[in-house]
Amino acid sequence: MRPYHIRLLLSGALSLLFYLGVAWLSKEFNWGEGYSRRPIPEYLLLYGGLFVLYALAVYWTLKARPDARALALILLLGLAFRAVLIPSNQIQEDDVYRYLWDGKVFAHQVNPYKYSPDQVTFFKQFMIREPSRFASTYDSSSVRELELLAELKWSDERSLIFMERINHPDLPTIYPPMAQYVFRLIHQAAPDSITALRLGFLIFDLIAAGFILLTLGHLGKNKTWVLIYFWSPLILKETFNSTHLDIIGIAFLTGAVYFLVKARFLTAHLFLAFSVLGKLYPAVLFPFILKEEVRRRGVHAGRVAAAVALFCGTLVVFYLPFLDIGKRVFSSLKSFGTYWQSNDSVFALLVWFYRDVAGIAPKGPVDFSYDAPSLWAKITVVLTLAGVWLFLFFKKETRDARETADQAGSLVTVRHLFIIMGLIFLLSPVQNPWYLCWVVPFLCFFPMRSWILLTGLVGLYYLGFYLDYQELNDRQDWIPWFEYLPFYLLLAWDLHRQRQRKLRITGRASVPEKS
Image (cartoon, rainbow, N blue to C red; front, side, top):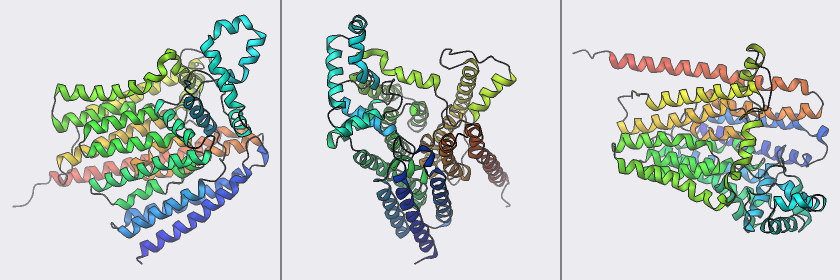
């Protein structure tokens, strides 16, 4: 065996032991029980150890030559990590209960955007106590649907327990249509099964890994770089323990990237639409893929119209079955955009600036925000994102003379997608760790040390729960500094080195050859 194989095997074997430790430790995380006794520090030590082993494996892989045996080892060990986590208890996350309920509701022909869990729980009480208001709120069809949903809630003990665990039960679902169809299919296969949901997510995870491998191969890069995704502790924890749905949209986004570099643009537009239907914000990437199509194929009104029609039409077709309730489909999205703020870095500093430095009084709620300083912070974030978006969209790129025009153009476009998705995360008022998962596939093509480091540091998010349970809330504000400050410092260094490298290449290219 080559030294690289031995290192990979050792780091993978140790990682497997650590994942077994996470699975064993997860037994102490039981919903609604023993908050102050939860072993969150021990979990963070395991996650930190996993990240160190992962970082070493990434370092060795980036230095290694293409190797089919190493690739097989990476895939086999990655599957073993997943197999260990799939039966584990969720550590500090409960979104999965909403997914299970949404799938159940939709499978019984009820619009999952129509009723909140609280409406199902309290509708009979509402009917008895306020009959006239109840009659003006619900028609006979709605009453029948609520009765059906109440029966589903009480159909068995597991259904009742899971439904009562849904977070923010006063709100209907926020998750887009593609997610709803996935939840429904999984419910029809195995109702109220977290394991079934994780196995369903495994399919999307493997699709993502497959598209990353295909893209690496097409771009002439080392396929073992898929390790950056397939061994990522962030991907593994948030998909197969926390059971977050982001992997659905991520899988389709990796497909869009692959079909982009293959110049199969209609398929790329379709996959991007599917990704948006998994989670909405990749919609901002559509113009970049369209721009690359125009660059490769030339300006053609028919092709542009077909691309726009396919992308927008796919979104409309998937939303159409839910639009019987009108704009209420987006009611929870409005609440999320107005009130949610969590684990943020740049946004928190902007709120502090407008509130404490600019002296804007924190009165609210106001339109699109919970108070005036946060509204100004959101305006600043939107303008910043729009400015970067416009700069990248209209920027003329130089290319390395060794690259073909098509390969260079594809790489530039993929890099722009990476920058936009990364910036959306960094500027967001909500920087939950699983949102960072959207950036990880791009690291297989652009393995920046700063972003890889952030996938480890963002795990400190869970320390906030421990401080809360120990009544040390005054220390929670320090957590984002430990998460993001090292990242921003290393990012600045990475960007400086990239610029220096580019200047050296440009300088060499401009020196005339001696005759």
